[in-house]
Length: 236
Image 1 (tube, rainbow, N blue to C red):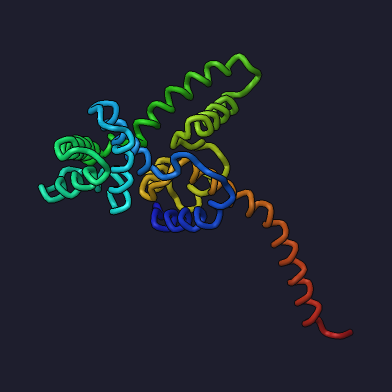
Image 2 (cartoon, rainbow, N blue to C red):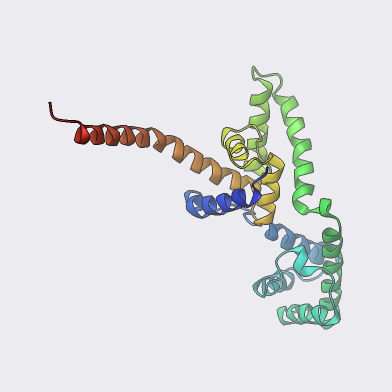
């Protein structure tokens, strides 16, 4: 039986303990990708001022408009509130209302279709890139598993794609520990609003730490048991 709650708690604990092992990570939070899409719509599609658009998104972020769920079409008061924030950022009332209504419609569409997550759009694109790169690497003296591993790592590092290597040892052990599948890991990363590639890295860091410390614990345990046996052995 899947232990999703246990896996979620493990991932939160691991992220908090090992996030500091890594430096800046572009697109660490998936909500940032959504906010960038909003800015791209306002600037690229509606032709609004770039500085005002980014400032407006920042203002809304600060009051809790983080994900499409927070932006989906609501009542008139929500539209008015969002438009007011954009006016404070420098947009006209007309442009601010237009911008908010447009972004909210996109958010509502994303929320209405669970398969339309931005992360899934990126994963579908990553899958295509990985296949192409695997083909390019096929001329090298590498196994299929090696080509796949290298291709996934490249996509993670170059494009910060929210993908993982399902065959990696730390992912396999985590899935076995909590009776989950790699797709469950991705879903949990999405639930935590974290880039799955970063979460993969912190889980890998924990795995390496535990692998390094495990022999020390074994030695310590053996020595402790030996000491205990000496203490209780009868004097001859």
